[in-house]
Image (tube, rainbow, N blue to C red):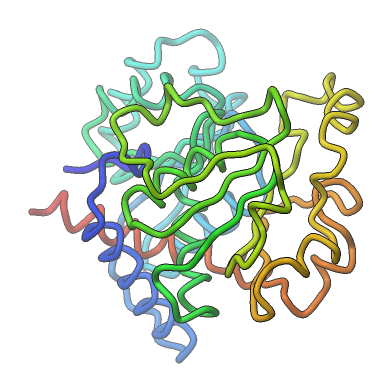
Length: 302
């Protein structure tokens, strides 16, 4: 049995297996063929952090695979009322076939997985967002036809940046990360990884120059609202706008995991422009996660 807690635990071959399976299932879906890969299976979905894309994509995804999704907020289960994570894990995992958790602390999801009898998927934590990277890489393949692009990440050194760094270290493409001073990635979260193909700086222009893919994320994530004014000031010059995007290759694409705040991390003309593939990327959350769930289920059965 395998869990999907970060991309650290997966080899290059395994990541590409999941992506290729997702591409296959997406093609079948587009042809109107919904194969019941997970017939009569149940996905428990625990949300301590709310989400548009995560809930819709997982709930629709398990349905299209022939199963059913069970939405559980922290107001609905004892986990939100003081029950130990280990107890909740041991109870829920005896009743469902797979669990997706979207929460704050990575340690919480790791403890849940330790006691779970079924595969556990990280739907997002403060430290990592691995399911988003499956969708992002899938989108890059579809639009760039290049499995070794130069990717520029401009913005906060957050869970998205950490996940980009892990994916780049696993797959070998060049990643350039540009963050403001004081907002760098947490190197402790990336220890024991080969980061030789990752360039880190505080210069967004240097990062974006001649890149194939430019990506960013909100500067003010859930739980950081009290830092809003300070962050807006600190991130001056880190907006992905025409002047910055024009430094990338002419056929470069723009990614954003959404929600996007126009005029902050990205300008209106970029996210609504011809280089933006953010809504293809958002749709690919559905397909990438279907591929992941089918892959995890196959490992459990073996």
